[in-house]
Image (cartoon, rainbow, N blue to C red; front, side, top):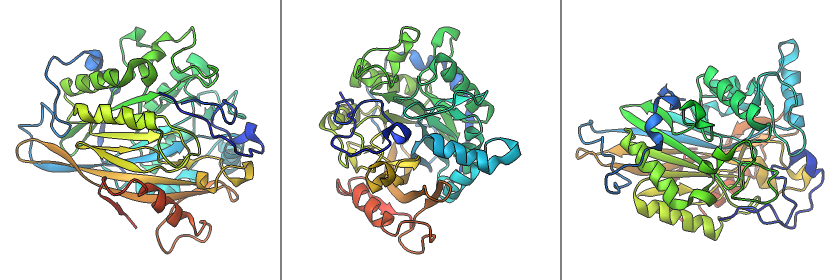
Length: 411
C-alpha cells in the first residue's frame, strides 16, 4: 500500500502550504446525535468469534425498530501560517477565532444526524510552537469552531498526527474531548483506554468510527511501516502494517461491542491526483467483500475523487479540502480550494438489516484571498466570493466513477 506526494507540480512556496514532507515526485502512500465516549468501549480490541457479518447487518439490530440515520463527512481541515494569522486577527483580544473560517459550512454539516470531519493537525493547549511550513499544530480554539459548525467528531490518523509528538497527541485528544468532540485514531493504550472506535448514538443507531493512515509521522522518510521509538503503538493505525484483515478484525470487534454501523476513515492516495490509486481500490475491495464495514471515508489527496459501491459498502476515495491554505498561489491545482461534503443515509429494515441507500453531495470552496472563508457551493446562486467554476469541477470529479453510490446533488 502506498500514498504518493504530487508529482511534477511547479510548487512555489512549498514550505507554506504543503501537507506532505515528501519531495514532489516521491512515492508515499448538525448534528442532533448523542455522542458517547470512545473510552467507554474498551472491548474495541477484542476479536469477534462470530462469523463475518453482512455489511448491511449488525448482530445487535434484529430487535431494533425500522428507521434511518444520516451520516455527514467532510474533507481535510488543517491550518498553516495564513489561516492561523487570520484567526488571530478575527479573535482580536480574545485570542484565536476560527469560527468565521468554518461557520459558512454549518448548513451542510448539520444535514447529518452524525457529522465527521478529518482533522489533519494536532491541537495545542498552550498555543505555542504553532504550525509552520509542512509542520501542523493549531491553536486549541480550532476545536470549538469545529463543534460550532456542527461536527460530532473527527478522524485523526494522518501523516501529521505526530507533528507535535506525544504531547501533541495527548493534548489534541484532551482538547477535543473538552469540547464534546470524539476523535478516532491512535492513542497510547497504556492507560487501558483505546483511541478507537469513536462512538456515536443517533436515532436508535450505534455507530463506530475507525481511523487509519499510510503513515502517522510525516518525517519518517517514506516509511509506511515504521513508527517513532516513543510511539510503537502507532502501528495499530497503519494500514500498511495491519492490512485489510486487521481493519476487518477491528470492525468485527466494534460490531461485537454493539455497533450497528461501522465507518472507516482512511488517509490514503496520491496528493493532487483526481483518481484513486490501484492499491487503495484493492484494499477497499478486500474490506468491502468482508461485509464488516458500511462506509469508507477517504482523505489525503487534497482534491475530490470519485466513489464506488463494493458489495453493500460505499467508499469515497477523497473528499478534497474543507479548510486549508492550498491553492494556485503555491502552484497547486485550483481544485485544492474545492472540497465536498457527503451525506449517506442508512436504513434499517424490519428484519434488522441495515443498508446504505443513497449518498448526497455538496461542493464546498475556500476563499483564501478574503480571510480563508469556507462556503457551501450550490449549482446556482452561490455567494459572489465563490469561484463560479467550483460546482461543475467538483460534481464532475465526484461522479467520475459512475453512480454506484446512488449520488445526487443536495443543491
